[in-house]
Length: 281
Image (cartoon, rainbow, N blue to C red; front, side, top):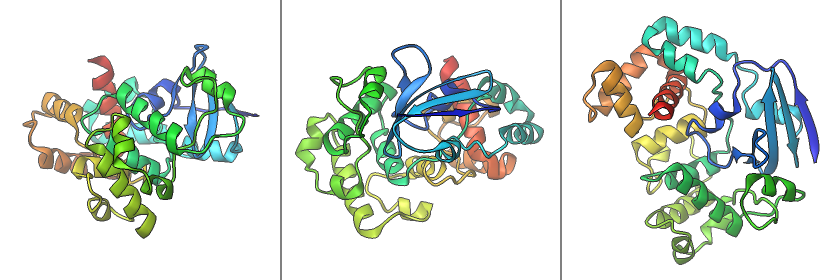
C-alpha cells in the first residue's frame, strides 16, 4: 500500500466530489474518515483536511491522483467566471464549492451511465459492484480497502471489467444481478467498444444501444471531459424550471440557455446546480 500526501489543495471537498452524481465506486469509509473506493484499477482510501489530501492506495503515484482529481485546474477561476456571466448561480457555486470533475475511464463511464438510467444511487452502486465482483480482476493488496468500504466478505476490491470481458457476458447472468433491461444494453455496448474502440464524439456515443441524449451528455462530461456538455436529467429540469422558468419538457431550450450563459463551462455549472438542488431537497 502506497501513502501519498498532497498539500495546498484548494476548492476541494471529498463529499462534494463523490456525491455529485459523477461517479459510483466511492463510498464514505467505515471508519468515518474520508472515502474508500476504486479508480483505474487501483483501490484507495483518502481523507482531506486543512488543504491536505492523504491517500492510501494500491497503486498510482502522486501525479496519477493529481490528474484524477483535476488538481491542475483552477476551480476558483471557473466559479468566478460562471458567477460573472450568470449571477444567479452564485449560491450553487458556494454550496458545492469543493466539486472537481474527475478524470474517469471512458469505458467505465459509458457502462456506469447506462446502468444509471431510471435508477437510484444506492442501486446503481450495488449494480456496479456486482458487475465488478463477477467480471473485474482482483486488485492485489486491496483487502483493507474492501473492509473500509463496508462491502463484500473481506476479500479484495475488484477493478471495473474491461470491454472484452463484458462482451462475453451472458444476458441471463447480468439479469441475475438485477440489471433488468440494461443487461442487453451493457453487453451490446461492450461488444461495440471491444470491436470499434473508444468513441470520439457525442454522435458516435448515440450509436451505442441504450445511450440517449442525456446519457450521452453525461458520458461526454464525465468520461470525455467535454466541459461544455450540459446533461439534462430530472433534477436539472426542476432546477431550470425553478430558477429560470423553463417548461420542464423544454430540454432544447435549457441546452440553448446553458450554451449562451455558461458556454464552455456549462458542465461545471451543471454540477454545481445539480448538487445544490439535489442535496438540499
